[in-house]
Image (cartoon, rainbow, N blue to C red; front, top):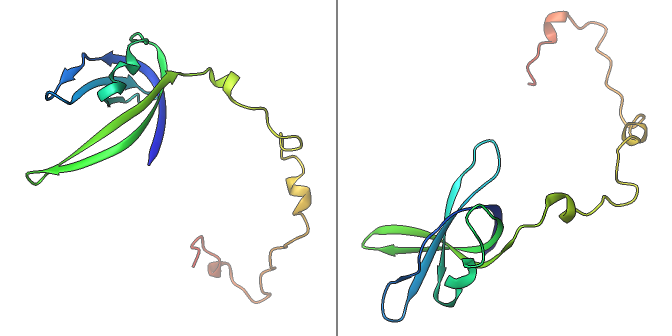
Length: 134
């Protein structure tokens, strides 16, 4: 299962040798929005150098997988990054709308005669019409 996210490179850490044959490196990105989030990712083995060419504060796009494991009845989740690239400007990356789909001005005209609401019964009282949908 693959995901991607864009944000500012907030912090990058040094590569750590976990054993003689395994190394890992972590970095944190800050997401955009009203409530920014700080999300930590992990690079492993030959992917540890992927973050080298980016400075803290750079806008990047991260492709990652979710990884989970159990150890001594404790559960751990990692966001395992496998690709890091410079984020493109949103205006440049968004394709123009398809021809004829740029507005929805004719939508009401197409559905004007499809359904008409039923008229209330002649013997209906005003208390029969409350705001409850049932």
